[in-house]
Structures are given as structure tokens and as C-alpha cells.
Amino acid sequence: MIEIGVLGAGTMGSGIAQVAAQAGHVVHLVDVNESAVQNAKRNLEAVLSKLVEKGKISADEHTAIIGRINYSSDILSFQNCGLIIEAIIEKIEVKHKVFEQLEGVVSEECILASNTSSLSIASIGSVLEKSDRIIGIHFFNPAPLMPLVEIIPSVQTSNQTLETAKSLIASWKKTVCICKDTPGFIVNRVARPFYGEALRIYEEGIADFATIDWAMTSIGGFKMGPFTLMDYIGNDVNYAVTESVFSAFYYDPRFKPSFTQKRHSEAGFYGRKSGRGYYNYAEGVELPKATEDNVIGQEIFERIIVMLINEAFDALFLNVASREDIDLAMMKGVNYPKGLLQWADELGLDWVLSKLENLFEEYGEDRYRPNPLLKRKVKALKHA
Ligand code: NAI
Image 1 (tube, rainbow, N blue to C red):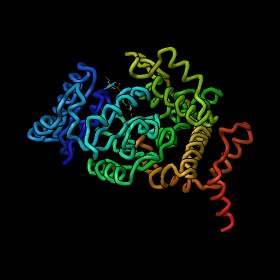
Image 2 (spheres, rainbow, N blue to C red; image 1 turned 180 degrees about the vertical axis):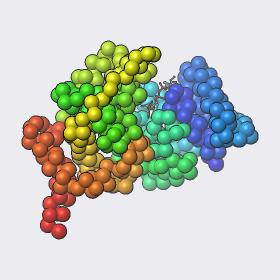
Image 3 (cartoon, helix red, strand yellow; image 1 turned 120 degrees about the vertical axis):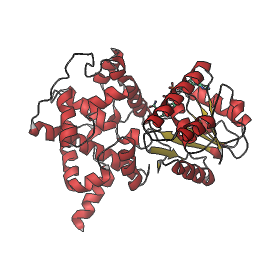
Image 4 (tube, helix red, strand yellow; image 1 turned 45 degrees about the vertical axis):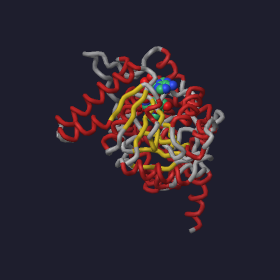
């Protein structure tokens, strides 16, 4: 079994190290910051002890897993690794410097992967001499619990790098989806309207946060409404992803960020982590009640779901991923109750299209333009 290197011992790096060690690999977890290394060690040991208490792993397994994780602040520990996953700060200049250094330490065969959410894999790989070893391996937070991993080959990636990464991550009992090196990959691209359209509906005064959340959970069957979810993710984090996807798509109005979210973020209303977001989580404060009006609820759900479906069609149209992977990614990465393309079939493609056409006509905004592939499919069905 190859040894795995994980660079960056923060939220994601520690989680990835846990997954790899539980899968039986010797793992080297490295961070420039000595206290981050110590924190990661403490947290991982606590998490693994909890797993013993819950009966998920035995005491022997616990000892073995802990024994397989080495902690260090020196990348020389990566010398014998077959794969390194970088999970450091999301800044391209820093990643460039680090990947150059990594290549100086590892063997010719070692795969160099990034867990980046928003940077281009091609750009990260551009600093490598042997750039066909670069690949994106994108876990979801928390890495040990979320089943999805998006694997992103860039224009430089060799087939061998892709195949090795794919089978390795699948052997860690993760659901692997292959995705083009495009902004937001699958999940962070296709999911944008879940937040963006909900915020827009709120801004238009159609409903308040609680009612929109109620519509999406009770009528749509989503596990969490958009505002509850944004409060979990953190408005600062979610806003930053939206802005980065928006600019990476050359300011396509489909991805336009929302002032409501910007102001909440600027005010420090990040969500659960700051005690207040769209909702107030202070002790003793009751959460607002939804106005459970089925007509409005249905309208909210329909508007958000057709926008999500349109985005899933766009990803398929531009070959970002296969139909199966687009559906699987949304179910395994963000817990959607159904894949969006399957959902579209169930709702009826012509119904989805006419809903989008109505929105496009009413608003005259490019954000509502129906995807050409959806239009073609509806046309084909009519002529079948
Ligand atoms: P974090 O802030 O929790 O951890 C980053 C760690 O990297 C810190 O411990 C820091 O000391 C270390 N670091 C910074 N520069 C370094 C360097 N030059 N060498 C070694 N270590 C260095 O960040 P988080 O949230 O774990 O994110 C890491 C990466 O994972 C980012 O690229 C992010 O986009 C991506 N990601 C984050 C997700 C999330 O939900 N937090 C989800 C999926 C991907």
C-alpha cells in the first residue's frame, strides 16, 4: 500500500488524513504551522476515540490507525509517498510555491493532487516539471463523513494519473465523480441556484427566510432549506464561493452574487459559527415560523428546482461530467433527495422548459435563459 502525504492540517487536511489512515495507509500529515499540527493530532485522536465509543471501530483498530498517522512540519516527510493531497490556504501564489517544493522532494511516480474548491488544476500544475502527475481530488466537508469525492483531471493530467487516483479513492469507500477542470467543478457550480434563487426570491419580497426554507424542505424534500444551509456553511464562505464562481465564469449573470448575502457577511452574520446569520441562534431566541401557504410554497420550490435543473443541464451540455456523475454528485456531495436530471424527467422536460421560458420572458434577464440542451431534448420529444 502506498504512503499518503497530506499537506495542510486544517479542517480538510485532518479529515483526509483520517480517511486515508482508516483505509490502511501510512499517512504523513504536514503543516507549516506547528500548532496546527498539534491541534490536528489532538482532534484526530479525540475523533477516533469517539468512533471506538460508538462501536464503529475496535480498540485495536484505533491503535493501528493512530499508529499509521505521522505528524510533521517538514515536507521532507513526504519522501516515500505515492500520492500527496494538498489542502492548504486557497491562494494560487502559495499553492504554486508549495507544488514546486513538493516536486523537489518526491519520486517521479508520486501523484500530486490538490483539494482546491475554486482554483484551476491546470494553473496549479503549471509549475511542475512533470505536470502530467497533477490532479484535483476534491473532498467535501467533513471529509470522513461525506461520501463524494470529485476527481478533476486537468489538460496536463495523464490517463495513468487519473486511473490511479480514481481506483485509490474508490478503495477508500468514496463515491468518485469525474469532472472537467472548470469553475466550481460539479457540486459548487450546479448548486449555486439553491442559494442564489432563494436569496432572489427573498429580495423580491415573495417570502421570508423561514418560509423559503419550509418550501424547500416540506414541498421539495430537501434535508435543509437554503438559509439554514447557508447558516451552516457560513455566509462568508458561501459568499466567497459565489463570488469566485461568478468571476471565474466571466461574470455570467446566472451566477451573480446577492447583496443580501454580502451584507449579512459584512455584518459578521456568518451563521451558526457566529451565533447569528439569517437566523438568530442565541439561547432562548425562538426561530421564526414559516408562513405555510402551499400556493406560495409550491411557487418557491418550482422556481428554485427549475433553476437547479437548468444548471445541471448546462454542466451536461458542456461535458463537465457525465449525466450519471452530475446526478450522483448532487446526491452524495450535498444530500439532494434526487439527482437533478432524473428529477427533470419526473417533472417533465417540457414543463421545466416552459417554467424557465416564463421566467426568462417575465424578467428579461439572462440568468433565466433556458439551456440549449434542454430545449433540444424537448424538441426531440415533441417530434418523437
Ligand atoms: P484551513 O484553514 O482549515 O487549513 C489550512 C491549513 O493549511 C492551515 O492549518 C495552515 O496552517 C496550513 N497552511 C497554510 N499554508 C501552508 C503551507 N505553505 N504549507 C503547509 N501548510 C500550510 O483550510 P481548509 O478549510 O481545510 O481548506 C484547505 C483547502 O481545502 C483549500 O484549498 C480549500 O479551498 C479546500 N476545501 C475546503 C473545504 C471546506 O469546506 N473547508 C471543502 C473542500 C475543499
